[in-house]
Image 1 (cartoon, one colour):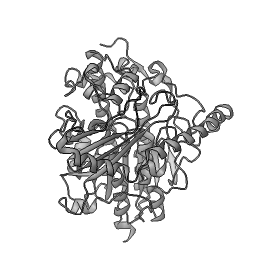
Image 2 (cartoon, one colour):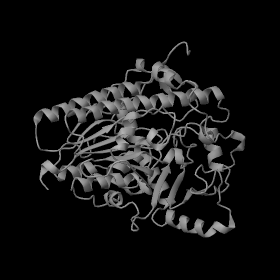
Image 3 (cartoon, one colour):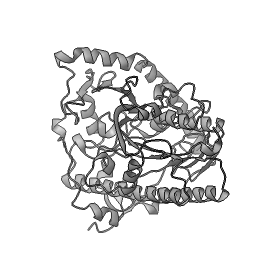
Image 4 (cartoon, rainbow, N blue to C red):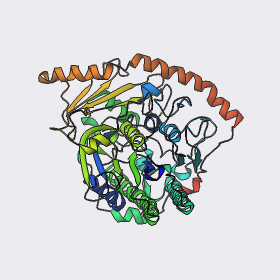
Length: 504
Protein backbone atom coordinates (compact mmCIF):
# COMPACT_ATOMS: atom_id res chain seq x y z
CA UNK A 1 0.00 0.00 0.00
CA UNK A 2 1.47 3.44 -0.92
CA UNK A 3 2.44 5.60 2.03
CA UNK A 4 -0.10 8.25 1.02
CA UNK A 5 -2.98 5.85 1.68
CA UNK A 6 -1.72 4.45 4.97
CA UNK A 7 -3.40 6.16 7.92
CA UNK A 8 -1.83 8.53 10.35
CA UNK A 9 -1.85 6.91 13.79
CA UNK A 10 -2.93 8.96 16.81
CA UNK A 11 -3.04 7.01 20.05
CA UNK A 12 -4.36 8.92 23.07
CA UNK A 13 -4.24 7.43 26.56
CA UNK A 14 -5.57 9.40 29.51
CA UNK A 15 -5.26 8.41 33.15
CA UNK A 16 -8.04 7.03 35.35
CA UNK A 17 -10.98 7.87 33.08
CA UNK A 18 -14.10 5.87 33.84
CA UNK A 19 -15.88 5.39 30.50
CA UNK A 20 -19.23 5.80 32.24
CA UNK A 21 -18.33 9.49 32.66
CA UNK A 22 -18.52 10.29 28.95
CA UNK A 23 -21.60 11.56 27.18
CA UNK A 24 -21.24 9.01 24.38
CA UNK A 25 -21.29 6.21 26.97
CA UNK A 26 -24.58 7.47 28.37
CA UNK A 27 -23.77 9.93 31.16
CA UNK A 28 -26.50 12.63 31.02
CA UNK A 29 -24.60 15.11 33.21
CA UNK A 30 -21.03 15.20 31.93
CA UNK A 31 -20.14 17.60 29.13
CA UNK A 32 -17.71 15.89 26.75
CA UNK A 33 -18.52 17.33 23.31
CA UNK A 34 -15.18 16.42 21.77
CA UNK A 35 -15.18 12.80 22.84
CA UNK A 36 -18.83 12.63 21.80
CA UNK A 37 -17.91 14.00 18.37
CA UNK A 38 -15.06 11.49 18.10
CA UNK A 39 -17.55 8.73 18.92
CA UNK A 40 -19.91 10.02 16.24
CA UNK A 41 -17.04 9.82 13.73
CA UNK A 42 -16.16 6.30 14.78
CA UNK A 43 -16.93 3.28 16.92
CA UNK A 44 -17.48 3.01 20.67
CA UNK A 45 -16.54 -0.27 22.31
CA UNK A 46 -18.74 -0.58 25.36
CA UNK A 47 -17.00 -3.49 27.10
CA UNK A 48 -13.27 -2.87 26.89
CA UNK A 49 -11.10 -3.99 29.82
CA UNK A 50 -7.63 -2.93 30.91
CA UNK A 51 -4.98 -5.57 31.54
CA UNK A 52 -4.41 -4.25 35.07
CA UNK A 53 -6.31 -1.66 37.12
CA UNK A 54 -3.16 0.26 38.04
CA UNK A 55 -0.98 2.62 36.02
CA UNK A 56 2.40 1.11 35.08
CA UNK A 57 1.26 -2.50 34.46
CA UNK A 58 -1.67 -1.32 32.36
CA UNK A 59 0.50 0.92 30.20
CA UNK A 60 3.18 -1.74 29.78
CA UNK A 61 0.52 -4.23 28.73
CA UNK A 62 -0.97 -1.78 26.24
CA UNK A 63 2.46 -1.13 24.72
CA UNK A 64 3.48 -4.76 24.40
CA UNK A 65 0.17 -6.51 23.84
CA UNK A 66 1.08 -8.78 26.75
CA UNK A 67 -0.52 -9.35 30.12
CA UNK A 68 1.51 -8.51 33.25
CA UNK A 69 2.42 -12.15 33.87
CA UNK A 70 3.90 -12.22 30.35
CA UNK A 71 5.94 -8.98 30.35
CA UNK A 72 6.53 -9.26 34.13
CA UNK A 73 5.40 -5.72 34.96
CA UNK A 74 2.92 -6.09 37.83
CA UNK A 75 3.41 -2.95 39.95
CA UNK A 76 4.22 0.73 39.63
CA UNK A 77 7.81 0.05 40.70
CA UNK A 78 8.77 -2.37 37.96
CA UNK A 79 10.72 -1.91 34.74
CA UNK A 80 9.62 -3.01 31.28
CA UNK A 81 12.47 -4.98 29.70
CA UNK A 82 13.92 -3.13 26.71
CA UNK A 83 14.13 -6.34 24.71
CA UNK A 84 10.34 -6.69 24.57
CA UNK A 85 9.05 -5.05 21.36
CA UNK A 86 6.20 -2.58 21.62
CA UNK A 87 3.70 -1.24 19.12
CA UNK A 88 6.14 1.65 18.61
CA UNK A 89 8.82 -0.81 17.48
CA UNK A 90 6.38 -2.42 15.07
CA UNK A 91 5.28 0.91 13.61
CA UNK A 92 8.92 1.85 13.16
CA UNK A 93 9.57 -1.44 11.41
CA UNK A 94 6.71 -0.62 9.03
CA UNK A 95 8.22 2.72 8.04
CA UNK A 96 6.61 5.10 10.51
CA UNK A 97 8.65 7.33 12.85
CA UNK A 98 6.70 6.91 16.09
CA UNK A 99 6.77 9.89 18.44
CA UNK A 100 5.50 10.11 22.01
CA UNK A 101 4.38 13.22 23.90
CA UNK A 102 3.58 13.23 27.61
CA UNK A 103 2.70 10.48 30.04
CA UNK A 104 4.02 6.96 29.64
CA UNK A 105 5.10 6.11 33.21
CA UNK A 106 8.30 4.36 32.17
CA UNK A 107 10.69 3.33 34.93
CA UNK A 108 14.41 3.05 34.30
CA UNK A 109 16.96 4.21 31.74
CA UNK A 110 14.90 3.28 28.66
CA UNK A 111 12.48 6.16 28.25
CA UNK A 112 11.68 5.42 24.60
CA UNK A 113 10.75 1.73 24.23
CA UNK A 114 10.58 2.02 20.46
CA UNK A 115 9.63 5.66 20.03
CA UNK A 116 12.07 7.67 17.93
CA UNK A 117 11.46 10.86 19.90
CA UNK A 118 9.73 11.77 23.12
CA UNK A 119 8.68 15.19 24.36
CA UNK A 120 7.44 16.56 27.71
CA UNK A 121 7.72 13.26 29.56
CA UNK A 122 6.42 12.14 32.94
CA UNK A 123 6.47 14.15 36.15
CA UNK A 124 8.17 11.39 38.11
CA UNK A 125 11.93 10.78 37.92
CA UNK A 126 13.18 8.25 35.37
CA UNK A 127 14.87 6.27 38.13
CA UNK A 128 12.92 5.14 41.19
CA UNK A 129 14.39 6.60 44.34
CA UNK A 130 16.07 9.60 42.73
CA UNK A 131 13.61 11.91 44.48
CA UNK A 132 10.05 12.13 45.69
CA UNK A 133 7.45 13.99 43.63
CA UNK A 134 6.38 17.09 45.57
CA UNK A 135 2.69 17.94 45.28
CA UNK A 136 3.01 20.92 47.58
CA UNK A 137 -0.04 21.62 49.72
CA UNK A 138 -1.76 18.59 48.14
CA UNK A 139 0.87 16.20 49.50
CA UNK A 140 -0.36 12.61 49.52
CA UNK A 141 -3.39 13.22 47.30
CA UNK A 142 -2.01 11.51 44.18
CA UNK A 143 -2.11 8.04 45.77
CA UNK A 144 -4.87 5.78 47.09
CA UNK A 145 -5.36 7.49 50.42
CA UNK A 146 -8.21 9.18 52.28
CA UNK A 147 -6.39 12.52 52.11
CA UNK A 148 -7.22 12.66 48.39
CA UNK A 149 -10.91 12.87 49.35
CA UNK A 150 -10.33 15.26 52.23
CA UNK A 151 -8.30 17.67 50.10
CA UNK A 152 -10.72 17.83 47.17
CA UNK A 153 -12.57 20.74 45.64
CA UNK A 154 -11.55 23.66 43.44
CA UNK A 155 -8.11 25.14 42.93
CA UNK A 156 -5.42 23.74 40.65
CA UNK A 157 -4.20 20.22 39.87
CA UNK A 158 -0.65 20.19 38.48
CA UNK A 159 -1.64 17.36 36.16
CA UNK A 160 -3.84 19.85 34.32
CA UNK A 161 -0.78 22.03 33.75
CA UNK A 162 1.04 18.94 32.43
CA UNK A 163 -1.79 18.14 30.04
CA UNK A 164 -2.01 21.71 28.79
CA UNK A 165 1.70 21.52 27.99
CA UNK A 166 1.27 18.16 26.25
CA UNK A 167 -1.65 19.50 24.22
CA UNK A 168 0.27 22.58 23.09
CA UNK A 169 3.23 20.43 22.01
CA UNK A 170 0.88 18.06 20.18
CA UNK A 171 -0.71 20.91 18.25
CA UNK A 172 2.79 22.15 17.40
CA UNK A 173 3.70 18.65 16.16
CA UNK A 174 0.62 18.56 13.93
CA UNK A 175 1.30 22.07 12.60
CA UNK A 176 4.87 21.06 11.78
CA UNK A 177 3.72 17.86 10.08
CA UNK A 178 1.25 19.78 7.92
CA UNK A 179 3.87 22.38 7.00
CA UNK A 180 6.11 19.65 5.57
CA UNK A 181 3.39 18.79 3.03
CA UNK A 182 4.65 15.23 3.00
CA UNK A 183 2.84 12.07 1.96
CA UNK A 184 4.49 10.23 4.85
CA UNK A 185 1.96 9.44 7.58
CA UNK A 186 2.73 10.24 11.19
CA UNK A 187 2.50 7.99 14.23
CA UNK A 188 1.94 9.85 17.48
CA UNK A 189 1.16 8.59 20.98
CA UNK A 190 -0.11 11.09 23.53
CA UNK A 191 -0.17 10.47 27.26
CA UNK A 192 -2.41 12.62 29.45
CA UNK A 193 -2.73 12.68 33.24
CA UNK A 194 -6.29 13.88 33.72
CA UNK A 195 -8.67 13.04 35.32
CA UNK A 196 -6.31 11.33 37.81
CA UNK A 197 -6.42 12.68 41.33
CA UNK A 198 -5.69 15.09 43.07
CA UNK A 199 -9.45 15.64 42.89
CA UNK A 200 -9.02 19.36 42.37
CA UNK A 201 -10.51 21.18 39.38
CA UNK A 202 -10.35 24.85 38.52
CA UNK A 203 -13.16 26.90 40.02
CA UNK A 204 -14.82 27.38 36.62
CA UNK A 205 -14.80 23.67 35.89
CA UNK A 206 -15.90 22.81 39.42
CA UNK A 207 -18.73 25.35 39.38
CA UNK A 208 -20.07 23.90 36.13
CA UNK A 209 -20.99 20.75 38.07
CA UNK A 210 -21.70 22.15 41.50
CA UNK A 211 -24.97 20.62 42.69
CA UNK A 212 -25.41 18.66 39.44
CA UNK A 213 -23.43 15.46 39.96
CA UNK A 214 -25.61 12.71 41.43
CA UNK A 215 -24.39 10.68 44.40
CA UNK A 216 -22.99 7.19 43.78
CA UNK A 217 -25.62 4.89 42.35
CA UNK A 218 -24.70 2.11 44.77
CA UNK A 219 -23.02 3.51 47.89
CA UNK A 220 -21.97 0.96 50.45
CA UNK A 221 -21.35 1.78 54.12
CA UNK A 222 -18.13 0.24 55.39
CA UNK A 223 -19.98 -1.97 57.86
CA UNK A 224 -21.92 -3.57 54.97
CA UNK A 225 -18.77 -4.79 53.22
CA UNK A 226 -18.47 -8.55 53.72
CA UNK A 227 -15.73 -9.60 51.31
CA UNK A 228 -12.51 -10.25 53.22
CA UNK A 229 -10.12 -8.65 50.74
CA UNK A 230 -12.28 -5.62 50.01
CA UNK A 231 -12.88 -5.10 53.74
CA UNK A 232 -9.12 -5.04 54.27
CA UNK A 233 -8.57 -2.70 51.31
CA UNK A 234 -11.16 -0.20 52.43
CA UNK A 235 -9.76 -0.14 55.96
CA UNK A 236 -6.18 0.07 54.70
CA UNK A 237 -7.02 3.05 52.47
CA UNK A 238 -8.99 4.88 55.17
CA UNK A 239 -12.43 4.48 53.62
CA UNK A 240 -14.35 3.46 56.75
CA UNK A 241 -16.10 6.79 57.31
CA UNK A 242 -16.00 8.94 54.17
CA UNK A 243 -18.36 11.87 54.70
CA UNK A 244 -21.20 12.91 52.37
CA UNK A 245 -19.41 16.23 51.89
CA UNK A 246 -16.26 14.45 50.73
CA UNK A 247 -18.26 12.30 48.33
CA UNK A 248 -20.03 15.26 46.76
CA UNK A 249 -16.93 17.43 46.56
CA UNK A 250 -14.73 14.70 45.09
CA UNK A 251 -17.26 13.59 42.49
CA UNK A 252 -17.88 17.18 41.45
CA UNK A 253 -14.16 17.80 41.00
CA UNK A 254 -13.78 14.57 39.01
CA UNK A 255 -16.47 15.65 36.58
CA UNK A 256 -14.74 19.00 36.21
CA UNK A 257 -11.43 17.26 35.44
CA UNK A 258 -13.09 15.09 32.79
CA UNK A 259 -14.52 18.14 31.05
CA UNK A 260 -11.12 19.86 31.20
CA UNK A 261 -9.57 16.77 29.60
CA UNK A 262 -12.22 16.87 26.88
CA UNK A 263 -11.50 20.54 26.17
CA UNK A 264 -7.82 19.73 25.64
CA UNK A 265 -8.70 16.85 23.33
CA UNK A 266 -10.80 19.33 21.38
CA UNK A 267 -7.71 21.45 20.72
CA UNK A 268 -5.96 18.40 19.26
CA UNK A 269 -8.93 17.39 17.11
CA UNK A 270 -9.31 20.99 15.90
CA UNK A 271 -5.66 20.97 14.77
CA UNK A 272 -6.27 17.77 12.81
CA UNK A 273 -9.34 19.27 11.18
CA UNK A 274 -7.55 22.54 10.37
CA UNK A 275 -4.95 20.62 8.41
CA UNK A 276 -7.44 18.24 6.74
CA UNK A 277 -5.95 15.29 8.61
CA UNK A 278 -9.06 13.90 10.29
CA UNK A 279 -10.23 11.79 7.36
CA UNK A 280 -7.20 9.52 7.15
CA UNK A 281 -6.09 9.51 10.78
CA UNK A 282 -6.79 6.45 12.88
CA UNK A 283 -7.57 7.89 16.32
CA UNK A 284 -7.67 5.55 19.30
CA UNK A 285 -8.81 6.98 22.63
CA UNK A 286 -8.52 4.99 25.82
CA UNK A 287 -7.32 5.22 29.43
CA UNK A 288 -5.06 3.05 31.55
CA UNK A 289 -7.93 2.15 33.92
CA UNK A 290 -11.12 3.57 35.39
CA UNK A 291 -12.09 5.40 38.59
CA UNK A 292 -14.69 4.19 41.08
CA UNK A 293 -15.76 7.66 42.37
CA UNK A 294 -17.48 6.29 45.46
CA UNK A 295 -19.40 3.35 43.99
CA UNK A 296 -19.66 0.55 46.59
CA UNK A 297 -17.71 2.78 48.95
CA UNK A 298 -14.62 2.53 46.73
CA UNK A 299 -12.38 5.14 45.10
CA UNK A 300 -9.49 5.24 42.64
CA UNK A 301 -8.89 1.85 40.92
CA UNK A 302 -7.18 -1.33 42.34
CA UNK A 303 -10.25 -3.58 42.06
CA UNK A 304 -11.95 -5.57 39.31
CA UNK A 305 -15.34 -3.91 39.60
CA UNK A 306 -16.54 -2.40 36.34
CA UNK A 307 -15.85 1.22 37.33
CA UNK A 308 -12.21 0.35 37.98
CA UNK A 309 -11.32 -2.15 35.27
CA UNK A 310 -13.30 -0.94 32.26
CA UNK A 311 -11.76 1.68 29.99
CA UNK A 312 -12.97 3.91 27.19
CA UNK A 313 -12.24 2.49 23.75
CA UNK A 314 -13.16 4.80 20.88
CA UNK A 315 -11.75 4.24 17.39
CA UNK A 316 -12.19 6.67 14.52
CA UNK A 317 -10.89 6.42 10.96
CA UNK A 318 -13.47 8.06 8.68
CA UNK A 319 -11.66 7.05 5.47
CA UNK A 320 -12.05 3.37 6.27
CA UNK A 321 -14.36 2.65 9.19
CA UNK A 322 -18.08 3.12 9.80
CA UNK A 323 -19.22 6.02 11.94
CA UNK A 324 -21.58 6.35 14.87
CA UNK A 325 -21.56 2.66 15.83
CA UNK A 326 -21.48 1.00 19.24
CA UNK A 327 -20.17 -2.51 19.76
CA UNK A 328 -20.93 -4.34 23.02
CA UNK A 329 -18.71 -7.38 22.48
CA UNK A 330 -16.09 -8.17 25.13
CA UNK A 331 -12.70 -6.71 24.20
CA UNK A 332 -9.36 -6.04 25.82
CA UNK A 333 -7.13 -3.00 25.82
CA UNK A 334 -4.54 -5.30 24.21
CA UNK A 335 -6.80 -5.49 21.17
CA UNK A 336 -6.29 -1.77 20.58
CA UNK A 337 -2.58 -2.45 20.15
CA UNK A 338 -3.22 -5.11 17.51
CA UNK A 339 -5.79 -2.91 15.76
CA UNK A 340 -3.36 -0.03 15.25
CA UNK A 341 -0.76 -2.38 13.80
CA UNK A 342 -3.30 -4.04 11.52
CA UNK A 343 -4.50 -0.67 10.20
CA UNK A 344 -0.91 0.47 9.61
CA UNK A 345 0.01 -2.82 7.90
CA UNK A 346 2.75 -3.14 10.48
CA UNK A 347 4.09 -6.53 11.60
CA UNK A 348 2.20 -8.17 14.43
CA UNK A 349 4.09 -8.35 17.70
CA UNK A 350 5.30 -11.97 18.06
CA UNK A 351 4.27 -12.39 21.69
CA UNK A 352 1.18 -10.20 21.72
CA UNK A 353 -2.15 -11.80 22.47
CA UNK A 354 -4.09 -8.76 21.23
CA UNK A 355 -6.62 -9.29 18.44
CA UNK A 356 -7.30 -6.74 15.72
CA UNK A 357 -10.72 -5.20 16.09
CA UNK A 358 -11.04 -4.40 12.39
CA UNK A 359 -12.82 -7.71 11.54
CA UNK A 360 -15.17 -7.16 14.46
CA UNK A 361 -15.90 -3.63 13.27
CA UNK A 362 -16.70 -4.99 9.82
CA UNK A 363 -19.00 -7.60 11.37
CA UNK A 364 -20.00 -6.94 14.99
CA UNK A 365 -21.92 -10.23 15.08
CA UNK A 366 -18.77 -12.17 14.14
CA UNK A 367 -19.18 -15.65 15.59
CA UNK A 368 -15.43 -16.25 15.58
CA UNK A 369 -14.84 -13.50 18.13
CA UNK A 370 -14.31 -14.92 21.62
CA UNK A 371 -15.98 -12.60 24.12
CA UNK A 372 -13.26 -12.77 26.76
CA UNK A 373 -10.93 -10.43 28.63
CA UNK A 374 -8.51 -10.87 31.52
CA UNK A 375 -7.09 -8.42 34.03
CA UNK A 376 -4.46 -8.83 36.73
CA UNK A 377 -3.67 -6.93 39.93
CA UNK A 378 -0.69 -7.83 42.09
CA UNK A 379 1.21 -6.00 44.79
CA UNK A 380 4.77 -6.00 46.15
CA UNK A 381 6.30 -6.28 49.63
CA UNK A 382 6.43 -3.20 51.84
CA UNK A 383 4.39 -1.08 49.44
CA UNK A 384 2.56 0.95 52.07
CA UNK A 385 -0.14 2.05 49.63
CA UNK A 386 -1.14 -1.39 48.36
CA UNK A 387 0.24 -4.12 50.64
CA UNK A 388 0.53 -5.02 54.31
CA UNK A 389 4.24 -5.37 55.03
CA UNK A 390 5.49 -8.61 53.51
CA UNK A 391 1.92 -9.74 52.80
CA UNK A 392 1.20 -9.23 49.10
CA UNK A 393 -1.70 -10.07 46.80
CA UNK A 394 -2.11 -11.83 43.48
CA UNK A 395 -5.57 -11.29 42.04
CA UNK A 396 -6.93 -11.95 38.56
CA UNK A 397 -10.21 -11.45 36.74
CA UNK A 398 -11.79 -13.04 33.72
CA UNK A 399 -14.86 -11.78 31.87
CA UNK A 400 -16.34 -14.26 29.44
CA UNK A 401 -19.68 -13.50 27.89
CA UNK A 402 -22.14 -12.45 30.60
CA UNK A 403 -19.98 -13.79 33.42
CA UNK A 404 -17.17 -12.29 35.46
CA UNK A 405 -15.07 -14.18 37.99
CA UNK A 406 -12.65 -12.39 40.32
CA UNK A 407 -10.00 -14.71 41.78
CA UNK A 408 -8.11 -13.83 44.96
CA UNK A 409 -5.08 -15.97 45.69
CA UNK A 410 -4.29 -17.06 49.21
CA UNK A 411 -5.45 -16.00 52.64
CA UNK A 412 -6.21 -12.73 54.36
CA UNK A 413 -4.18 -11.37 57.29
CA UNK A 414 -5.96 -13.69 59.71
CA UNK A 415 -5.33 -16.85 57.68
CA UNK A 416 -8.85 -17.11 56.28
CA UNK A 417 -9.19 -18.17 52.66
CA UNK A 418 -10.28 -15.28 50.44
CA UNK A 419 -13.22 -16.38 48.30
CA UNK A 420 -13.60 -15.58 44.62
CA UNK A 421 -16.50 -13.45 43.41
CA UNK A 422 -18.90 -14.29 40.58
CA UNK A 423 -21.24 -11.89 38.80
CA UNK A 424 -23.66 -12.22 35.92
CA UNK A 425 -23.29 -8.83 34.29
CA UNK A 426 -26.31 -9.25 32.05
CA UNK A 427 -28.63 -9.74 35.02
CA UNK A 428 -26.60 -7.71 37.51
CA UNK A 429 -24.63 -4.95 35.70
CA UNK A 430 -23.94 -3.14 38.99
CA UNK A 431 -22.31 -6.25 40.51
CA UNK A 432 -24.44 -6.28 43.64
CA UNK A 433 -25.16 -10.01 43.85
CA UNK A 434 -22.17 -12.29 44.31
CA UNK A 435 -23.13 -15.76 43.05
CA UNK A 436 -19.94 -17.57 44.02
CA UNK A 437 -21.73 -19.92 46.41
CA UNK A 438 -24.87 -20.48 44.32
CA UNK A 439 -25.15 -24.25 43.72
CA UNK A 440 -26.65 -23.80 40.26
CA UNK A 441 -23.61 -21.84 39.06
CA UNK A 442 -20.77 -24.08 40.26
CA UNK A 443 -20.02 -25.30 36.73
CA UNK A 444 -19.54 -21.68 35.71
CA UNK A 445 -17.28 -21.11 38.72
CA UNK A 446 -15.19 -24.15 37.84
CA UNK A 447 -14.92 -23.19 34.18
CA UNK A 448 -13.91 -19.60 34.84
CA UNK A 449 -11.48 -20.55 37.60
CA UNK A 450 -9.80 -22.94 35.17
CA UNK A 451 -9.53 -20.11 32.64
CA UNK A 452 -7.86 -17.88 35.24
CA UNK A 453 -5.35 -20.51 36.30
CA UNK A 454 -4.58 -22.39 33.08
CA UNK A 455 -1.77 -20.00 32.07
CA UNK A 456 -1.28 -18.02 35.30
CA UNK A 457 0.53 -19.38 38.35
CA UNK A 458 0.06 -17.06 41.34
CA UNK A 459 2.84 -18.74 43.32
CA UNK A 460 5.27 -18.08 40.46
CA UNK A 461 4.02 -14.49 40.21
CA UNK A 462 4.61 -14.04 43.94
CA UNK A 463 8.18 -15.32 43.61
CA UNK A 464 8.99 -13.12 40.62
CA UNK A 465 7.63 -10.01 42.32
CA UNK A 466 9.72 -10.70 45.41
CA UNK A 467 12.84 -11.13 43.25
CA UNK A 468 12.20 -7.80 41.57
CA UNK A 469 11.60 -6.14 44.92
CA UNK A 470 14.96 -7.48 46.16
CA UNK A 471 16.62 -5.89 43.13
CA UNK A 472 14.95 -2.57 43.96
CA UNK A 473 16.69 -2.82 47.31
CA UNK A 474 19.86 -2.00 45.37
CA UNK A 475 18.67 0.24 42.53
CA UNK A 476 16.57 2.61 44.66
CA UNK A 477 19.42 3.52 47.06
CA UNK A 478 21.71 3.74 44.01
CA UNK A 479 19.43 6.34 42.41
CA UNK A 480 19.06 8.22 45.68
CA UNK A 481 22.82 8.45 46.17
CA UNK A 482 23.99 8.96 42.59
CA UNK A 483 21.11 11.14 41.29
CA UNK A 484 21.24 9.97 37.65
CA UNK A 485 20.20 12.54 35.07
CA UNK A 486 16.70 12.25 33.62
CA UNK A 487 16.69 11.91 29.84
CA UNK A 488 13.15 13.24 29.42
CA UNK A 489 11.01 14.63 32.21
CA UNK A 490 8.40 17.27 32.86
CA UNK A 491 9.21 19.39 35.89
CA UNK A 492 6.23 19.52 38.24
CA UNK A 493 6.15 22.76 40.22
CA UNK A 494 4.57 22.09 43.65
CA UNK A 495 3.05 25.57 43.49
CA UNK A 496 0.72 24.21 40.79
CA UNK A 497 -1.05 21.96 43.31
CA UNK A 498 -3.40 23.78 45.66
CA UNK A 499 -6.95 24.25 46.90
CA UNK A 500 -8.53 27.68 46.73
CA UNK A 501 -9.06 29.32 50.09
CA UNK A 502 -11.90 29.67 50.83
CA UNK A 503 -13.81 26.81 49.21
CA UNK A 504 -16.93 28.72 48.24
